[in-house]
Length: 187
Image 1 (tube, helix red, strand yellow):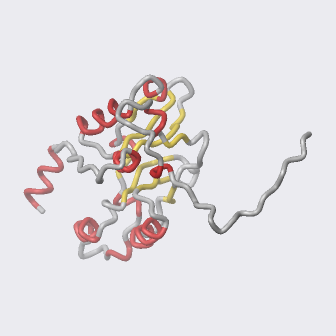
Image 2 (cartoon, rainbow, N blue to C red):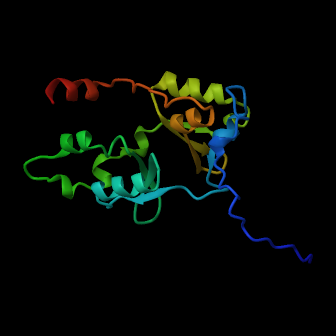
């Protein structure tokens, strides 16, 4: 084994973030904007986490979304700061349920309502291809699944893509479903 040199962290050494690099474009490989769980742990929340506490936690961590897991650490959904907004919380409050009693599981998008891209296809796609797919489907997030190994391999976020491309946050409108229309009419 080799002996490695060790250094001290100088006061001028800067903590670097992926957004500081200008090497990502719409024609870059999609793997550049993919949060691969093989290399970094997913940001997760337990389903029973109090919704207001989750919002505080995510705000403090500068995190726009987290995967929601059950007691066995299996993904059951995804929660974003948008879903934890006071406006959305108030829509879920009723005479029997106070805002302080809401849990993440009450507000999250369930896994069967999320779109997914396969890891096998994003290996050959560009950032622009992924962004176009998100916009076409009216989704701000997608899960990446490894079809061969049946694994949830990562997440791609339109907000992260915009940040890496040095663009303002992208506004992606969700495709209206019958339930969305019904909720808007009778809310």
